[in-house]
Every structure is written in structure tokens, then in C-alpha cells.
Image (cartoon, rainbow, N blue to C red):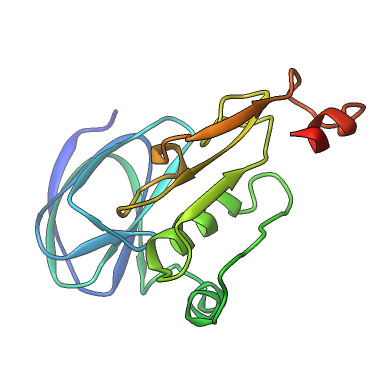
Length: 168
């Protein structure tokens, strides 16, 4: 990890923290994907978008990039403001599906159930499984959602196993 530094940051700034890193908001008002935020460790291979709503004093250890403004796309905000009770998210690998789901769960007044059907990734369910869980408080990541029930498929790819996956 890089050296620890303490830095004054202007309001309406997003700090993109690249893991392996640590960040602590000493003073100010911050959020991550709609979740109030004070501090976190960012794991290797992850990026945490910390949005500073007010002038802030942060302590950071590791790599980061400052971006003026909020990095949440307007389309995400419009989606949450819509009158939806269910949203199905699908897309290419590493396209922001988990981040969008986290943002929706944090910001929507109607949606608090998350279903994880990605059998190759361990967010809510374990790899090789599909699962769901209720969200009763704000979360930084889908991996914080406690699985309430699930179905073990026995594979990390639906290719050639679609009937087993559909059975779940």
C-alpha cells in the first residue's frame, strides 16, 4: 500500500479508491452508491466510489483518483426515481451490474429484495449457487446481503446446465 495521507477535499467530488487501500472520512458528509460512508478497506481488484457531498477531510492509504462531480450516471438516478417495484439487471462482465443493484437497493423506497442468479460469482450466494436476501439497511456492496435461501446448481457456468439453473 502507498503512504497514508490526510487531505482536504472539496464538496461534490468523487474519490475513486483503488484496492488494496483504506479510506477514512474524518470530517464531512460522504456516501458510496447511496450508502452513508465513514471508512472502509478496499480489496485488491476493486474500486470504491466515495462521493463527498460536503467539503471533507479524508485520510487515505493507497491509490485514488479525484473526479469533480458525482460518478453515478443520471440514468441510474432516473431509474430509482421511477415507479418500479422490480428491476432485472443483466449485462457483460465488469459492466457495473453489482454497483447498479447496490445503488438501487440503497436509494429505492420500493425495492429491498435482491436475487443473485450469477452462479459464477459470489455476491449474495456462493459460487455454483443462486440465492436471495432482504436488505433492511444501507449497504456498500451486494456481498453484505445475507442470503435467506438459495439453490445449489453444482456448476459455475449455465452453459450446458441450463435445465439445472432453471430448476432453481
